[in-house]
Figure 1 (cartoon, rainbow, N blue to C red):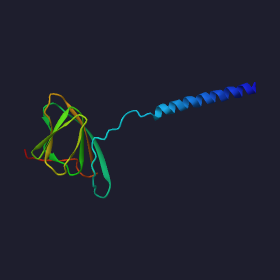
Figure 2: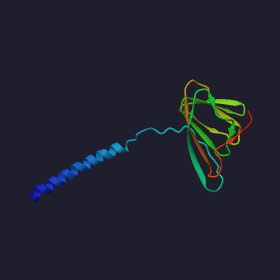
Figure 3: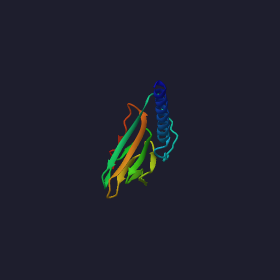
Length: 138
């Protein structure tokens, strides 16, 4: 009887390990692709830095206030399209595209379409530094 019990436990352990191996194989399969949409070398000032990730939704036919950024800012458009106007020049960024915004340049983002636009903005800066500086000029 003990021999049969040991054989049953061994068979169960073998079956369980085979099932676990199968499960691990499934887990090791990549769930999605990685696609780099922007890469840029950045020099950061010494000291502690803060990474900010900001979700932005722009209603149709709206614009952000004119502003500048004192630290590196990167924009990934997730839905729709955004027109980035920087010191008189415009560039359209469509869903799936990313751009880096120039430091200390006067700019604004606009949604000139009939659909909402959604973007994710990333910034690396000293913790005490403001995300942006608004520009009162029109």
